[in-house]
Structures are given as C-alpha cells and as structure tokens.
Image 1 (cartoon, rainbow over the protein chains, first blue to last red):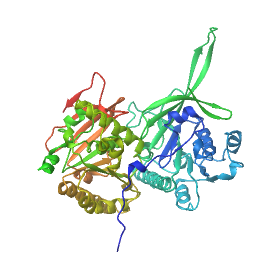
Image 2: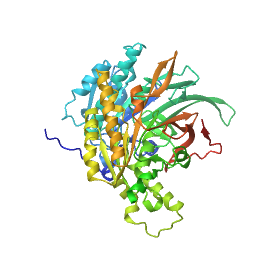
Image 3: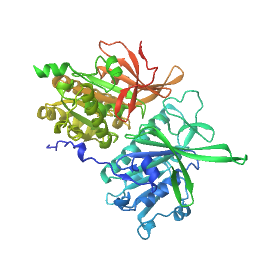
Image 4: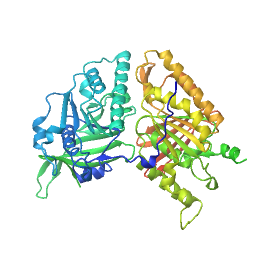
Length: 269
Length: 266
C-alpha cells in the first residue's frame, strides 16, 4: 500500500487571515480581528453582547478582503430559538453587497449529537468562511448528570465537536466563533480557570476544563454597574461593558471597553 | 566531533531561571513533557523552543532546525515571527554584538523557514506522521527538536477500547524516545490537564492517564500562582524538583520581572 508521505509547510507562507468585527478599535484590540483557521470563544453572562457580536460578524464576513471581510457566506447555528432575525435586520455596515441575508445560512441545533451530525453532514461545496455556534453551552445543559461516566462522555463530545470545527476551519480557511455562558464560582479556588467579575458575580466559563482545551482563543465579555458622581454632584449609575482576552495564541491578556449601540457593537477608545 | 558537542548542549527556554531548574535548558536525546491549563503558555514555550534551537552554534545554541507538529491549530506564524525577532536581537545583545548588517540566515524570516510545520487533524494522522519521522529525520539531519503541541488533543475523543488507546500511546511514546536517542534531538510533548476525583475531591492532573506518565524522561508542569506563571520540574532523572516564576511577554518566554521572583527548591 503506497502512502503519500506528509509534507511539511513553511510558516513563512502561513499568514493568518483575520475577520473584521466592523469596528477599528475592536479590530486593533484583537490584533486585526477574529482569526481564521481556529476556534474563538466568546464567553459571558446573558446579555453581555455575545449574540450581538456574532450578528455583526455575519455581516462583516460579506465585506471584501480589502475591508477586512471574507467575501463569503456564513453559517449561524443557534441552540436557543428563535433566530434573532429582528436584531440582525437592525444592523448595517457600509459597503455590504446587496441582499446580505441571502448569504447567511441558518440552522438550529437541538442537542450536542444534533450539532455533531450537522457538522458531519455539511456539504464540502458549502463555501462558508464563518461558522458561528450560539451557544455551545445550551446544548449541554440538561442532558448530562454529574456522574463520572456522563462527564467523560460529555468531554468526549466536546473534543469531537471541536475536531470537526477545527477541520472545517482549516480546510475552508474559516473563522469559527462559539459562544459560551458563565457559571458562578463556588469555591475559593477557581481550579485552573481564570475567573472574572461580571455584574458583581465571580464567574468562570461554563462547560469546565475539558472544553477550555478545545478553543484556541477565549474572549470574555463582562458587565459591571457602578455609581459615578457627576460634576453637578449628582450620582448616576454607569454600566460598563468590557471585552477581555483571557488566552490567545498571539495576544497578551488585556481588556478594552465596548458599547452596544443600536447599529452595533463598538469599541470605546 | 561537533555533533557530539551539540548533543550535550541544551535548548534555552528563553528564561534563564527556567533553564537553570532544567539543568541548562531542554535536553537532547530525551523526551520532555510540558503540561498545563489552557493559556498558561505551552504553545508559547513550544514556539520559543522551535526558535531557540536555531540560535547559531557560535552564539551558544545548537544551530539546528525544528519540527513543529500542531494538533490544535494554535501555532500562529505572526507570533513565531515576533518571538524570532526578539530572540535574535537578545542573542546579539548578550554577545555584545553590533552587526551593521545582519546576515540573511540570522533574520526572522530564515528562522521561520527553518521550522518544518505539520498540521495534524486526527490521531491516525498523528501516528502516521510519527512513523514517518524516522525517514524524514534521515533526510534532514539538522533537525534538533521535535515539538508536538499537543500530543493529547486527538486522544481525548472516545477510544471505545481504552486498552487500545493505552497501546497506541505506548507505541507512540516508544517511537519518540527512540527518535530522540537515534538522532540526538529533543522531543517536547505538550500535554493537557484534566480533573481527577481522588480522596473525596477533584485534583488537577495531566491528561492521558497513569500509564502515560512513564512516557517521558522529564516532566514540567506550568501552573498559575495567583496571576503569576510558574513552572515546576516534576520529573527528571537527575535534577531535584523545583519551581520557578517565569513570564510570557511580547518577546516570548522570559524571566519574571517582578521583584519577588523566587526559585523554590523542594
């Protein structure tokens, strides 16, 4: 049986394409944008801005490469119906092609096995260069108990799903974005996961340590409320949203402030 | 003979403190396992070693090439370039050189070109590649380090037969040990971390099971101590366990810069 020996690649020819987030401040913060060829996780509590960012990426991927896009359709897999169509319709970006919604493929996933099956049966001819899973956490919520056997089979599913996603990312040069929820930290020790504060709670990403090993980049979106004293002496509540790089193959740990405004997610310089 | 002397040299990790608990750096002819949680710096250390193995012999390095086997997709060329640039500059600084014109072979582009990069997408691809390395290394005798980042990823999906997984892992580690000895190179294996329930509570432990722990000559565990990165020499044939504070910077792996950095001997 003749087999073709594997051929090494030269890293000089391995440039990582980045997908713009549609905002120059956020792009700069993330070293150019969301990287293609690997999995980026957006983690945060409800209403942190994860879905909003994902919807924005669905549009920015349609932009030409000269504007940081991928000139390609995308696939949005959602696990918490309904699909947020109204929110998508409120977004806009300059220089979009006509009828952008025609280039966005949308599929529901009802369970982890459903997602795995969906990913396994994606036709190779589907030219998507952005795959979004919103959210991965909802697929694992009720199905598994905390028995060692269930945790093991859950963990095994993480790696199977991640392998399929990375495979697609590699073959298509696609950006893969997965959203995840947070859980409260109970013990004093975070146990390997970096915890962050959001809305006054100490939280860690859901799905545990095994899932953490499945993503290449982790971006944490947090919210905090605080009181600020105005110049006229009045106190008012200020809500701050921050985006944190928790780990990344090429970015240092850092954070930046962002805001969600009617037409999208914007960095605050 | 030059190659014998080269074999006695170590590959610097970029952090002098970390090098010293390792007895000078990563050893040739041996398999070193590096384990830790996501984000602790395993890939960063892997890239640093793939660069530092290339530091010319006259500057204290091995002047060798690297094989980087990427199973997770975390290797980014831009980061490797950044680390290469900094390593080259620091090497010249250390030797008090002020070269007006840096020779072509000492530019970051050349360092990147000297990394044989393989992207592996399944455990069968991984086994096939490791089996092929013997032939590849005969054809590329200047390779002095083989890095697998991570050796673990493709083995954490269901192996219906756990005994089979243990056999496959055992065969793989034996092959890698043989390659290290035969070609006088370093093999560095990145490993993930999992939680094990023992004695009534959960503990962090390296992945791939108990039998895997015999698969390496040396083991280094990277861990967080508060907001600081530490490396712990967990296994070595002749060095005492010790831990040291190190950092990951824009330049790559370096000594910790804080005042209270400690090297703790156990």
